Image (cartoon, rainbow, N blue to C red; front, side, top):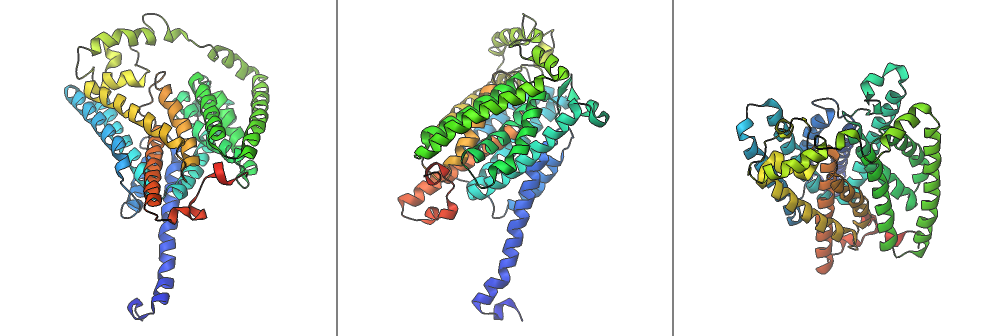
Length: 436
């Protein structure tokens, strides 16, 4: 008998398993896609492969393009147009062409994440957070294994005596570990069911790996992102009980981190490198031939060149052969005036969207606070290092704009008295519902 001959209720029952199967497949592919972010030293990496499957899984009915995404789409589009124009004189240079191709690809991933999260923000953010925590655990565990040369794997998972895990650069690994650490900290702070038991082991692994990267910038990013998340939660919650819990857990957490640091520094191999890396400045930073000197000398030259130096050409201009190590300067150097100005404008728009969203009373507020606490600080980190090809940064860009689009749609639904957002299952706002 065909489905057409069945009663309506029977047809719905027959169709239900198919819908659940599709939804389950989508969640699985999304989780695997994010978890594969742990492997950044392989090209092409599993992350790129699973991105294709994720796009195919969600392309038909799983994406939502709202007008709130315009700053993201337009800003990144113009930014890459500038890069393509700057590439023209170097089109035969494989490295330069690959650099711009990667920029275009990462921008597409940001737009994909934004449209994905805008469609179903809370459910998909849960999947993304779970996959990202797994990625952080994998990368962190291998970083620790490499640093202590367990099984002779140091040559694969360290660089210059620092833990790099499955990343090419210890600095990128360190900053990659910040979002899952902030998310786990938020879960514990908001007393989500089982958060402490499930989160303690991953947090210890990732904190140890973060320390062993000996990345001064990543240390600062983790501390600042965590502090910003805690501060925003404290000032936006209406619950006095939650505020008391935040103060108590912050004190306990600080003591725990100091104990972990003391234990790590009791190991001579860790202490020796820590003493060197703890300095605020390194030899390669200083002097006219250091990176800071090269940055200053590049500014007058860039004012004379509308198309910049060309993608990845900064190091060819200066005898020292250094890269910009500053994402905003590199936007002008590699993407020309068009790319540089559009990136500055995109940064300004993102600052506005992010700060507005975290103070907006909406179901997405809790998620927005965690995302923005990480993204804002890592955008500031761009003044200290090149971040323009960090995959997790584009994930955070997409998450922020996706949450902003969802919040706008929820506000419109409230205004028109359309009330599905008031269903408890659709609300993720421990700032008002928990601890009261």
